Amino acid sequence: MMVRSRRWRSVAGLAGAVAVAGWLLLAWLAPRQALPAWLAAWLFFLAIAVGCIPLLLVHGLTGGRWAEDLRPGLLLALRALPMLALLLLPVLLGAEWLFPWADPQTATDPDLARQRWYLNLPFFWLRAIVCIALWLWLAHGLRTRLERAGRISAAFASAGLILYAITITLAAVDWVGSLVPAWHSTVLGMTLGTSQLLAATALAVWLRAVRQEPERRADLGTLLLALLLVWGYLAFMDFLTAWIADLPPEIAWYWPRLRTGWTWLGGALIVIGLVLPFVLLLSSALKRTARGLATAAALVLLGQALFAAWMVLPGVWTPDWRSLAALLLALLGIGAGCAAVALRGHAVLAPGNSPAQATPRTEAAP
Image (cartoon, rainbow, N blue to C red; front, side, top):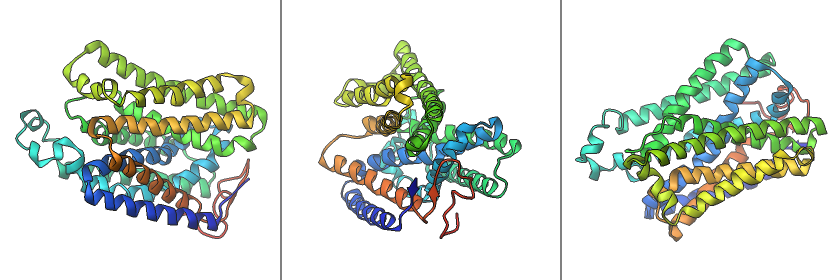
């Protein structure tokens, strides 16, 4: 049983406010070190919130008990999405310090000039606003339908999945791919979308691990394992294709990740985010235990945090004390803020709760 406590919400809110204030100070002093850290941290927590949307939409089409078990945790994480939408502002306002194509010093670069029709600030801002607005609309539609009817219609689920596929592709290209404008990947949107599905599932599984019956625990572990393998396959095939092609654009992306001081990050990502949870989830005995399943889900979450750092930091970041401090403050500030929003109210999330039971008793659901 998980009780959302006002006291913990206050503590999380205060910690988040202090951390964000510290990050803002660093951003004022060294924006080129602070902004990549904010983007990496924001993408990780955004993955958890946005990943809840396609999971609930898929359940609207397929049905099954798996989403009934995960639904309370998914709806809880989804509550942080409006705040995360506002936290995109530093990225939008500081784009010229973060993205090479937005830097005024690259205005005469001939390679970037060919991409100016797409990579320009007004169009970039418009695409970001449209993506965030559609995700907020889908989240609101999901909550409304679940609270009123307890189900999601197939028509809404189908349309929502199409919108999600389009928006996550645009977001992946804008917020990750354009950090290295010469690099292009046809599976970047799929990889980032699968990462979001995996992160949201991992959080929901972790929240429910200690309350599931043994056979239900095994089912959730199998679902988590399947998503882990899909994400690992897409990420590896993208790397393998680039390695075989050995072209300058691919080298521009992978060189700082594999031939610099960032090599340790890739190794940590493989071991913590893929190998260890794979071994735990492959064992039927381990994933039937609350501790085993919770450990695997926690490792997956940590791995997705490393994946967000892997996607953003090596290409634009030179580690120093200010950069590391900015990353820690961004993770703490955004994470604590999400926790404070999610912990609003005093609802009790127990197994088998209906969506109406999963909403706060003392405060109305947003």
